Image (tube, rainbow, N blue to C red):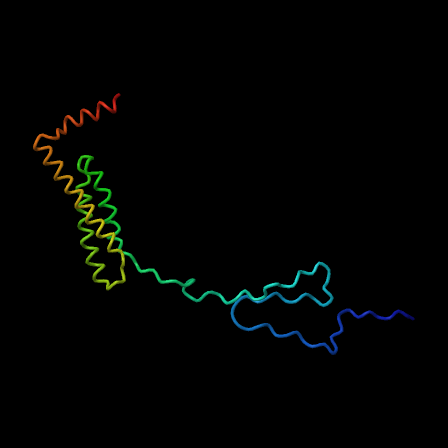
Length: 164
């Protein structure tokens, strides 16, 4: 009854070779090739293919970062802050003392670490600035006792400047 030839529903795979297996190894693989015949709006073929292997485990290379001693950092912060605070009702004195204590403790810890902790410079800066702050306190006390510096006159001058 029907003289029309039948149209196959899919491509004829008789005699064709199977597609190659996917490449092995690390990295990202290229997308599969487009269907035979190109198809409508087929994506362009990949230009670079494989993106290469992922970075090695543990980061992108470079030297590992040694842990730093937090006490050395705090001794530096307290030592630096103690210098201007010496002039504010001697608030810098306890900060300078704490900076010296933390500096001495952290220097011992850094030496005992055998080179693992590397921020001995922070401890040294904390020690030096704390000593400078205490030296300023001693200088201010000597100047006040000798009468060269009159704290009450200094306070009156500061009040006069802020009130004008």
